[in-house]
Length: 92
Image (cartoon, rainbow, N blue to C red; front, side, top):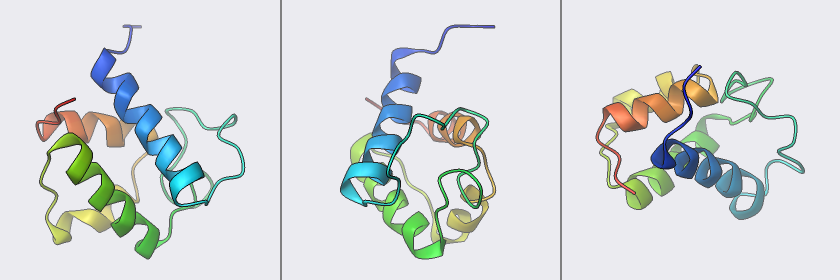
């Protein structure tokens, strides 16, 4: 198992902070892991919350996520979301 990069850690922390504090959707992030779903049963983001998170991610990490790509993000795990942002050229 490889150690996460600083950028991977930054993205994870940003997602969890945004969802729990800024969007006030999760009372606690202690149970969230890389295997947690972005949608139901994990971060529990509905379609509107996913759009809001995507806007925050685009601004913070300077990535472009077309509207047509937002819904598939909701079917990912947190780890897959982090990898997808890096694949799209996320910058810290």
